[in-house]
Image (tube, rainbow, N blue to C red):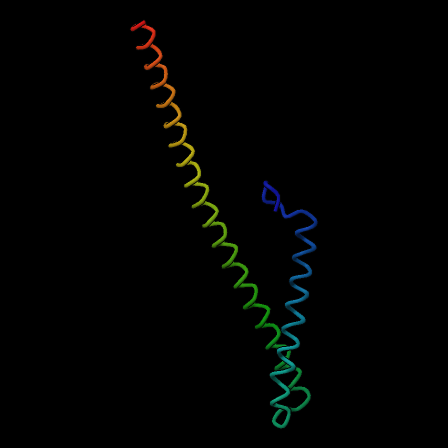
Length: 112
């Protein structure tokens, strides 16, 4: 994703390819599942089971992607918060060192 949150055309292509691959995986898994049921299913029933299985497979994949995306946003927020806190502490430490050096320089100037 770009900084603005827009996935851009590369992200769109990646998303399209991911969805297409998932659909194919779902169809393959559905065919494999129904192969063991051939003795019990008519052709129409097999097609319906395959269709529903593939649809459920895709829905589960989408839910997984959404959970992963939500968690990624949470983790990103946590790391950004920690980075800001660390940056503030580093700035404060730098300021203290600067003030300390200035004080030492002032004391040395008075002593000489």
